[in-house]
Each structure stands twice: as C-alpha cells, then as structure tokens.
Image 1 (tube, rainbow, N blue to C red):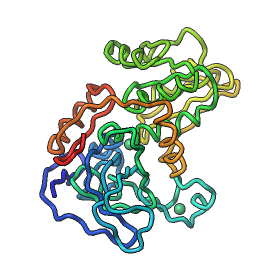
Image 2 (image 1 turned 120 degrees about the vertical axis):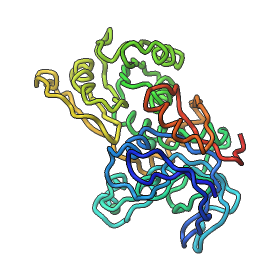
Image 3 (image 1 turned 180 degrees about the vertical axis):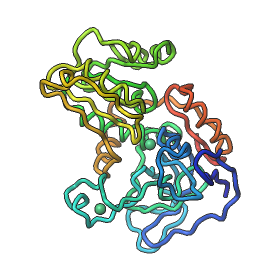
Image 4 (image 1 turned 135 degrees about the vertical axis):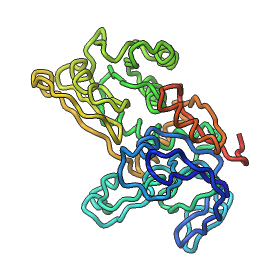
Length: 332
Ligand SMILES: [Zn+2]
Ligand SMILES: [Zn+2]
C-alpha cells in the first residue's frame, strides 16, 4: 500500500510502499478513502508534540470501509463505512477511564501520533474506537468531522450555554462550530488573523454576526470564547472580550506561551480551561447532531502523495475549511 511517513520531526513526509497491515484480535483493517489534515498533524510533524511513534503514518480523521476483521470483532462487518478519530485506545482501568473521562486516560494511545494513522491506503484500528458515518455525508465531506468536528463540539459544550460566542482562529474546527452554534440560535463573533480579509469573509458566509481582527474587541461583551489558533497571546485578548462569569476555552493540543496579564481581566469569575482529546460519547453525540444541523464541511482535496503540500498550505493559513487527503479508491 501507499503511505506517507514521518521519519523524524522537522523532516518532510516520505511517500513509501508498505505491506498492508494485518488486523490483530479486536481490530479492523480499514481501506481508507479520505483522511482530513488537522493542525495537530502539523504539531506532530513540526516536533511541537514530542512523543510520536517513529517512523509514523500521521492522520487521525479517517473515513474508510472495513476490509477485513480481526478475531473477536462484533461491532462491524466487512464493507461497513467507519470513521476513525484521534482517540485510538484507552486502558479502561485508570481512574479517568472509570470516571467517564477516557479523554484523559493515563495510558491512552492516539491515532496518527502514538499509533499509525490515515495518511495511507490502509490502517488497522481498534473496533471500539470507530464510529459509523452518517449516510448523509460523502467520504471527503465526513473526514473533517472526525476531529475538527468532534473537538469543536467538545469545545462548544465546554463554553457553556451563553448566546454570544467568540471564536479565535477560523479554520476547520471553527467553520463547523459556527454552523452548530447558529443551529443552537447563538451568535458567533469571529476573530481572524489581522488583515486576513478572506478568513473574515469566510466566517461571515458561515453565519458569523461579526468578524474582526484578533487584536480587536467585539462590539458587545461575549459570554464565552473558544481559541482554536495556537497563539497564547490570544488568551488575555479573549479574557478582555468576555463578560463577567465568562469562559475562555483553549481547544488546541499545543499553544505558544501565554503572556502575563493583569488579574483584573480574570476577576469577576471569568475562567480559562483547555480541551483535551475526546471521548467516544462526544463522537456519538456529534455524529447524531451533525446531519440535523446540517453541518456542511468545506474541503480542499489533495492526493495522498501531496500530503506535504497540504500541510504547508495549512501552516501558512491558506486553507479555508479543511484539507482532505484522498486515496485512489475514494468514492467521492
Ligand atoms: Zn485509562
Ligand atoms: Zn485533530
């Protein structure tokens, strides 16, 4: 099979021919149709996440069909279409797993980071961590739901029920969150890179009631803000934008250092929290919600062999919506 491989952080991915892996007991062999490109992949490739399996096949927003079953597989059959997210395995035994917080599992394994992922034609995955994909979506359209959608949804829940919601960084996750928030009759205030008119227009086209530069303050106090951009200086900026009792949710797995800020902007019960990973329950909830909204994803497709180009376009902020790698046999 064709795969693109990270040999070491900081190096471009290498295209290679590998043997198709064999599913172990409890695993599925997935014939991959589409795999979306996430900012987390950039953090892995650039070495900001420091514990990757090496060599590694990145990618954790996989849509494909089941090609072969390992022993003791009961949830899926050959030919079923499934999605594979970032959370690839948990121990089921640590205090977090037992407490319904499997996203925080002490021994968790992650697709495309500590397990091989979806920048390939095939992958083996644990059946317990896969989701059926709603028929409503094509393979390519569904792929960004697996992380941008799931993490966006978890962030939205963390932000609480307030009506006025700020979103910093209008990429793949934000373009999905904006649609869900609108469906929930909330108002989205979009903050984009200073001077990025394209991103502002993109946000407004998805229903944002206001869009401005990330160093601006919104016309009204917000109830909550979600930061998708990996820029720590946005934390004090977002604290200034929210009202009393508001929450700033940091969604990324990596962020540059947060500069010091006066206590007065945190005072009055404002809070800051982060979102880590996802639970299978998030996945089930979001996959049933998405077709009701209905969430539509805007995607730009790349051939699997062009993964480096997709990553570099994402790094320079040139992707509006989500980049998706497609393999030869994608059913579009
Ligand atoms: Zn655990
Ligand atoms: Zn991701």
